[in-house]
Length: 317
Length: 263
Ligand SMILES: Cc1ncc(C[n+]2csc(CCOP(=O)(O)OP(=O)(O)O)c2C)c(N)n1
Ligand SMILES: [Mg+2]
Image: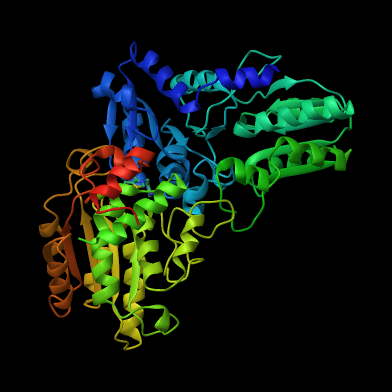
């Protein structure tokens, strides 16, 4: 099947990140990567070797990392601050709010190994809060790419963006999705598959299980599910949401995030306030002590999986 | 050198196919002395308010802690067979779901503040228990450590002892190259601490050092333990990749051989 084939072809988002930055840095001396002992985890070893003058190591100090990045950005540098999403968006939240967003310093924050990518390392290393906290901060664009294409495009756009951007990357190899749409813009969701019976809206690493669920529903029950990669959590693509909600069919959102404050609640808020009362379900990580396991075990446990999403679809239809 | 503990650390990391190998091997002698000689804590008094407290700030080397806690009888060692597995309470960082663990750590730069709070409480209640915490040398640039260091001397916490596992390495390289924190002794002295250096693999030296606590009345004590990351397994020693490297079958056997035979 197409999806399986493309999964094998895909790289980890971080590899795409590293390679794309290298190709851009070659022609742009203003591109700077700032790390907090995260060069290895961020697959930035080769970048550092090639461009030793375009990487600034801070050490294990995420608040300092973001403050320094903001200072660098204020001088016109195109700064990527790279650190595990859990520490970057929790520990350094005040620096993000004040020094980056409020002060209009266009830092590109790169949260690596996001969501539950760190698996059995546990809650300290999970970021299930980042969409929620960053959504409430004015002046920051939040992006979670679903495949190598989106990742590369997002990095290119972020490099030139004169506003703060948060890029959320997982750890594992990503598919090349068979998208019907091949353009990429922040704030414009990408339709991966059309279908008139229900709509699955997913983001980041959950787009693939959503797509697999859609294929399962089609093969086993003839149900046609549309699949959207809602890569930009803020600003959310209300137009696309409205378009897909207009048929009155059920909507299921899927995200590697707490059920609170993420993609699902952002969509629900818009739909409610627009008088669109589609049946609606959020598939995400519940508000509990997260189960121990690898990322895929955690996904399966909470139904962020081909079967889990397909079951919710059948319930709601 | 604590050979049996080292073998167990490797055994469970090998089984889990995950773990922080180098830093567990660098700190395990310190844990050995703290738990088996210095501290008044064990399963028998763990519910007592008077027990000594140990808070591991460098939470990622939890394998060393779990192995020592099992040996102390906090839980059956066989529990560690489930390390990092689906639904296990034995995750890759200290968690209070495991008997004997005082605080949930894993994000660096939290242990010293937690320890300061615990030590202030002892002072407020006129209790005699002491608080020990273990820091990594790479985690010191976290600003919270220095905030806590100030609070510790401000409140004259001579019931607090921090140990730095000074193995000279972190994930990306030598600590001196990533973010130089030397001279550590002068810095902590300037922050109002009483500081001693020790060979972090010499059990006798560690025992004697901890027996001398507090180093000065009215001051928090800092032990700068000079250690070797990966200590005890020749090919792991001072090698960056063993920060969270997991041995292959051949490497595992070689390591066990060096340590005197499989468990
Ligand atoms: C706040 C925070 N930032 C980053 C990390 C990721 N991390 C885990 S271990 C480590 C290196 C720690 O080095 P060091 O303190 O020297 O520990 P050791 O050498 O004893 O393993 C890093 C960066 C973390 N756990 N917490
Ligand atoms: Mg170290």
